[in-house]
Image 1 (cartoon, rainbow, N blue to C red):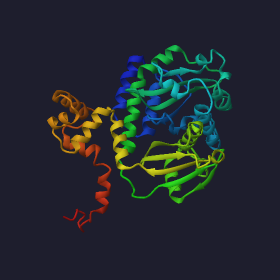
Image 2: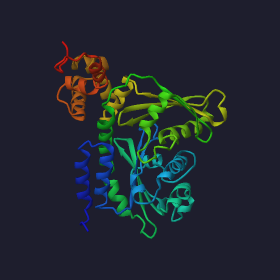
Image 3: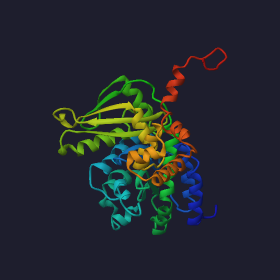
Image 4: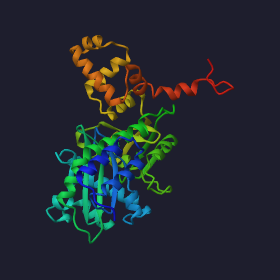
Amino acid sequence: MAARWSIDRLAKEVSLLASRGLPRPDYYRELAARLRRTVEFDAACWHTLDPQTLLMTSDAPEELLDNGFLQLEDAPAVGARLVASEYLVDDVNTFAALARRREPVGILSDATRGRPERSARYREVLTPLDIPVELRVALVTRGRVWGALHLARRSGSADFSRADATALARVVGTMAEGLRASIRFDASRRGDDGKGPGLVVLGPVDQVELVTPRAVELLATLRSPARPESDDTPPTPLLALAAFVRAAEDAGPQSHAVAVPTASGWITLHASLPEGRAAGRVAIVLERTATAQSTVLRLEAYGVTPREREIAVLLARGLTNPEIAAELVLSLYTVQDHVKSLFEKTGVASRQELVARIFLDDYWPQIVRQTPIAADGGFVA
């Protein structure tokens, strides 16, 4: 058996991994392998969360499947029960609650004072999967939540300890930075496909009552690879958003939106209750995220602050540092500090590189598609 890592060694190894910008499946797999060198667990389940609403936007339960906790045909129903425990009932250690803590790590037995049956998630999700021992982590960095982690131990295993929680709390920010980098490289640097939106109407128990052909295409990109191809249960982001909209019904008619990173680009979901709030139905419009929105998301994924985002936009407009200072009523030195921070966060050395990296990625695929190609494979002048 490999030697156990100290917390310092774990922190160093996770930091190196986070800097690689791996696709999410690779990042999850390699991160779990490193965490196991310090904290024992039998399976990990990963989620991405929308940093604005804290709604789940994807799930990766492959380890639960591979290690016999979850059967493929049961995954959709389990996912629906998990969404319900997160957003429809009061429960302990929800990802949103963990995200607000100074230490965003929670052990189920601690939260229930040794009586896990008090938890709806334990009763409805964990017990059927034979998971008596659970630890959860909200992946928070710079005050923003990008994902969450669930760790499971089998029956007969010892409970997670405070030492386990302390070790994970030490690397929470670094894990979140790595996930943010994975989202950035895996999804946000893609172009729109030029097609319009799609529509899905979910019934009171989340059955699909209406779906347009375009929505079918977009739904396919949202599905977890852990779900069977024949499964027609709505993907987790739709279930989470629908639950959120229904829960907010008392606030009156309104629309809610969430951006979901996928391997083919950001997809925005707009959900609302139909006129008259027809018996729990929810209408959801799906569309490729518009350029302006994806630019904000891209800057967010780089950890750019709202003020730095303002300055990035002005740089793209061609303003000089003194002009930006005058526009925003800031000192020149403050603008220079913000520009330096922008360059460091986005990994560029000039404003030209910044504009190309942040603002042109959506346009470049369209330029390529619309540019005639010469016979020798070069672009026609």
